[in-house]
Every structure is written in C-alpha cells, then in structure tokens.
Amino acid sequence: MILESARKMISKYTLCDSCMGRQYGGLARGVTNRERGRAIKLVLAMEGHVECRKGDPEGEAKADGERLLRALAANGGFQPAANLLGSAGGEAGGCCHICGGTLDRIQDYAEGAAKALEGYGFNNFLVGVRVAGDMAEREDALKTEFAIEFGESLKMEASREIGKEVSKMLKKEVEFDRPEIVVTIELPGPGFEVRPMPMFIAGRYRKLVRGIPQSKWSCVHCGGKGCEICHGTGKIYPTSVEEIITGPVLAATGGAGAKFHGAGREDVDATMGGNGRPFVVEVKGARTRSVDLAALEAEINASGGGKVEVVDLKYSDKRRVRSLKERAKVAEKTYRALVEVGCPVSEEALRTLEKSFNGGVINQLTPNRVLHRRADKLRLKKVHEMMARAVGDRMIELVVRCQGGLYVKELISGDGGRTKPCVADVIGCSARCVELDVIAVNEGA
Image (cartoon, rainbow, N blue to C red; front, side, top):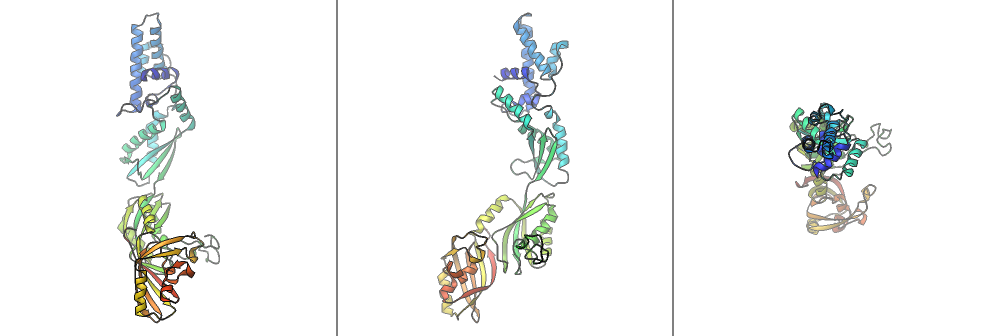
C-alpha cells in the first residue's frame, strides 16, 4: 500500500525527501520525515532496478522499471536512481511540488528564529509556524488525491525540525505546554514574530493609609485624557496600589504592560493590614524573566513611601489568577469597623448584637453606592463571628469575621433596607461606618 501510493505520487509530482516521508509521518517512530522519504525512494529504486533486470528487454515490466527510476531521478532528486539510469537519467524536476524547497532551508529558518529571540530572557521556548495558503492547499490536495491516511502536516514538521535546531543553537529546551516565549515563523517568508508569554508574580500587599484605590481610576470627565477637573493627570486619585506595585515590576522585567489581579478589593477609604491581600501581577511582553524578587520587593516598598508595601513575592502562573478570583468570593476576611450610632448602646445590647450575627446569613442586594457599576442582584453571605465594644460616646468598634464578598458598610447601616439583617436594625437606631480596616484575608484566598 505504501509503495504503491508512493510510486504514483513520485511519478506525477516532484517531491523532496521530507514531503514524501511526511505523507507517512504517523508510521514508524524515531525517524525523521526526511529519513522516511529517502528510505521509501530507496526501496522504490530497488523495485525499479529489479523490474529492469528481470523484465523482458522489450517487455512492459522493464519499461515500468525504467519509468520509475526516471521519476525518482527527476521528480525525487534521487541520485541512486539516476546512477542506475546512467546517461539516460534526465534532468531533475525542479522544486518540490508542496514546499517549494522550504524544508531544505530548515537551518536558515532556525538561525533567523534564534536571531529574533536575541535580547529576551527565557528558559524554554516554542516554535510556531504559519504556512502560506497555497502551500497548505497543495498538500491537502495531494493527500486527498492519494487517500493519505497516516500523514502529518507540513506545519507540524517544520515547527518540530526548526525547534530542534534552535534548541541546539541556544541550548534551551522546547516546551509545548507552557512555553515562556513563542517565536512564530512564516513559511516560506521568512518572517519572524516573537511573543513572550505572560509572566506572573504573586505576593501580598498592605495598604497602610486611606485614600488610595486598589486600581487606577481614570477621570470620568475626560476619560483619562487630562482636564481641569483632574488637573491634567487623567486620574481621580494621584496613585493606586496597582501603579505603586506594577511600576517597579515593569522596570525589572522590561515588560510592555501589566495587569493587576487582586483577591477582592478594599474601599478607597479603608486600609488593608494584617497579613495583606493576595495579588498577582500579570506581565505582558517581558524581556527579562529572571528577576531578583527580594530586590524587587525592596524597590516596590521604597516606591510605596510608607503607603503601600508588599511581602512574599514569588513566581506564579495563570492558574493562581483563576484561583484568586474564585476564592475571593467566598474566602474568609476580617474587618475592623468604627461605627457611629444614633443612640446609646449598653453592654447588654452589644452582647445581643454579637449573638445576632455570629453564624448568621446576610441577605444583601447590591449596595446603592456601587449600582452604577455592578449588577443588581441578591447575595447570601455569612458572618462567622462579630465582636463589639464601646469606644466612646455613641461610638462602637466592631470586628467582623465573614465570607468574602460581603459589603461590611452596608451590613452596618442596612443601606435603606437592601441589607438584612443589619447592625442598625438590631440596636434599634442608625449606625454608620466612619472607619473601616481590613485586618486579615484568609491564606486560601
């Protein structure tokens, strides 16, 4: 079956060793398509030789043998067949019908890819290939014409063979599942496109002062362009946790951009203390992937100027980002709230308040203050524990350990009936959060 289809192919089309062997690339492991193709041509040449030697000098068998050898010499560029034919070998048939000689330039493509990767730091890589449409169409047509069942694509072969050569040149490993950088080559091109894969650095941050948002807030009046209201900055707030952290990260990695992922967020007027809030910085287009994380941590903390600091920096991955987002909705968080109340609250009332909420489930509609940017829906959130104490005239302090995603300010005020039960309803008078601090975020967040 193999020799029959191969004989028909080489009799009709000019095929290099690689393109011939690739039609049977799914058969026999541990050899290259070039080796397969040459082996097939050798066996065909031997068959042609047998036909020439055993056939009647004037008969069809000898003529078939000569035609096969002539096709191998002309269309296959196979010198042993030409040698058997002697002076009657004929001229070679030109460039390969499928690749046009592209696969004879593997080394050139590899050198171009290695040059394109200069200036980037990485431990592993992957070569991708974009094959010209006409080339792919010729291969598809040939596979259909000869009912090829066990072949592979030119794209797959080129990617693999170029990758092997680049690996030898750079002494770097090819990584298929999670490459740090991808170089894509256009065939026949040549064209080279380098795409560093996102780099992830995780840690925890503490926000030590109020008045700093987690992420950059563009001015709503000018859309970030700069106007009189924002004093030309394009921002509502001068800086943010995101900017303080990502600035040094981009400088250290040479990245083209960064995206900040936090395990939830605290309000602008709240602090974030304790063990800090987990975050991941996703760096795009990093040119350097080997970073001194201890030095980076020190640089971020210096740029934070006592307002924001980070701890426990480490390399991470995309899975951590997904986990961060999902767990932030439910992971336990602890808040300290200073609450102004509209009536005197006795010690007995404070104990009643604690009992009312310990282990309680809160029905909370999206707060009025965020309705402009959040969907209006009902959330069921649990309060694991509440501790209360008086700290002044009509002032109490609450420590609330609860499920992530609970709006604590509205838990206190009731938000006009949108959060039930609430502190105000239990104590029987108004209650307003005047100061809020996040003091712990569960390690599993």
